Length: 308
Length: 290
Image 1 (cartoon, each protein chain N blue to C red):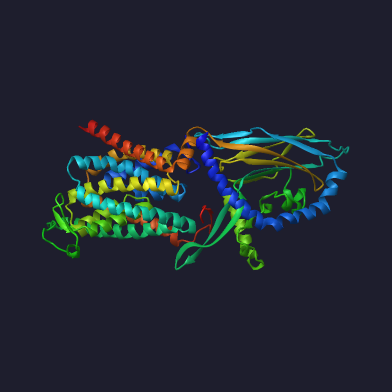
Image 2 (cartoon, one colour):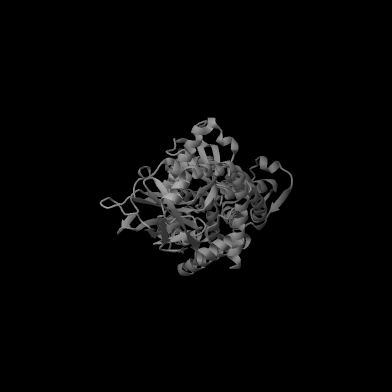
């Protein structure tokens, strides 16, 4: 069954995109990530123009992160003050990012820039996760105790000015690092069509030393607001949000996520992290291949923008 | 109606500027054909023949609805005042061209920079037909000369493709420009937007002919022009023009005009739908689980 997508201007197979939403929803339920880093490349591979893929994906992440954020909020896992600072940074980053997307499209480097940022960020995060999860698996096999976070540990983050108290996170740190992290996440959300959880969660754990239970709730809370803002900005600036496509992905996504959560409960944390790392690295390699391999067609047709 | 007016005005303003620019640039090229027409074609056209072609299109308005997966239109017509030579095969050729509005586009070429394939060269063209379907009774090179094909933009290789920058038209860039032009044709054919059928136009009886033209699902929405060219022994006798309108209808039209006419509201609306969907899913599944 086909449906004409009004913004992407193409006829799409409903079941293909519902299925894609389900598969990515399953992954995001399994691993507790938004799944944007999987969905955007899949959309591009299936023929959706990359700008429409990125814009539409932002809307889909709003849907998938809202349900998670509600659940975390009910459990009291959201640090509102920290969340507010992350959102402020995120909005700033998103505005810059959406304008940057427009500029990249005008000069014709958008596709390469998206691919490059995917390769860079997925490579770093995937590599780190792979090493960490393999170490944990090896240690548990050897029967060692894994050292938990020790309170009182300090790093360079604690030397910065503008210190604030974050009660929920039991932290007394400068507002600058969370603001900078927020800006980076907002920027990535705009140019990569991702929620940014895969960068924000490690950054909050390892740089800010936020307790793990608060990390997931607060990052979901931030993702909802930043992707919502990104969706609106893409709609205004680029007119690349296809609501029909977003709906198809959302329906598949929420169903898949439920099965993913159930499947995730049967696996150990480090096993999940290992699988996620493997998948992140696969996507990274696929994107890298697109940049390095000699293309079959050197030419591409680009659109002309009014103010170019 | 008000909404679609907004979108239309938006598009017109965009085209006006380009049109003026393109006209100034193409002035010389536009005048060129007239000399030839006066010198060669005109006597044949008026003095030696009075054959005419009349044609029409099966569908004047094609509605692009949510279920649109492409469609087929039939261009049909008849030759008037046919000459009869006894014992000879049909001496007439008909070429049917259906094309979309010319719109500017940028062609980019990748090069290997430090191991990465990224876009390096870009040439901007004015007025490249968004869609171009051609159907003829015989292969074009058997029907007439490439000179006449060029004059009337009949056939992919004969579509006028003029770069916006004057610098791009320099003689030393000719080979590169040709590569860019053939890339446009190659990519458009791959997208199914440039199609040709070299024996697609058939005579039904002596003077009636028909050609079916396939409009793919990804045909750019906008007006189409249908041209019917009548040839005898390589001479262009007559041309008939008709129009086909492609229009968004139903949900697709509402979404498109909403997204382009009121982008802020559209964005906020999308976010509300998304947040609502996420909230509905979480309450539904948590209620079922408990």
